[in-house]
Image (cartoon, rainbow, N blue to C red; front, side, top):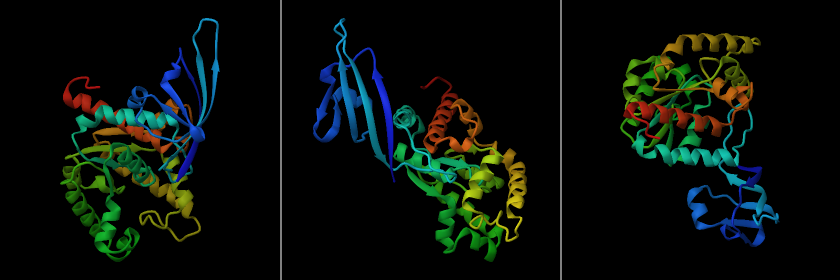
Length: 298
């Protein structure tokens, strides 16, 4: 997927003309020193204007359109990462990389909380591998999770889920998206505690909105054939969230998407980009690592 982002920059107080080189076909190249400080590489198209004030300083105004690949969306709609977000997540990855020491990151949370989408963003940024515990169970059994529930029952699925987590706990440098009910078994925490567990805490109304957008057919604990499926989905989600709330709170890191939305100036959690959530995940992990190391590591 390719996304296009337009930004307007004012570099102040000035950038020396030797720091940038205009290249053919509308590309832009920064000096080596500038490039070393910004590791993101994207193609640019731009308009460059130089003003010459009387104090001999030059103000360089750039109107930049940058295209980049691998933008990811949450289930609820299309969200594209901004240039600033891309720089921010790379900077945060550099800050915590050595302190992570290759430990896996386990994303927990309700169905529809964006674990798979955010997990892919995180794995790409960190240079980690990505795994989805539900997908691993499906590969093992040979049928979908919905079919496993129908043919073998939930207990069978939970056993397979635990076995998948046991195998993943032996790995390093993985971001792992877990199933919504993984927190209900104590033994699963034993496996996840070998890495860092992160709760993506999404309010009920946002979960309902996202799941309603894609349907419940692939979600065995929610799917209903009745005409009143929407209302039953709301009730069932509310019950599951209440039942699992304390278990989710055992995660070492909590990311409140509602608080993040407020910080970003929006009332709708579904307007928050996966990149913004991933950045907040890394920010909260850095705080956890500071506490773990007993000092201000960052």
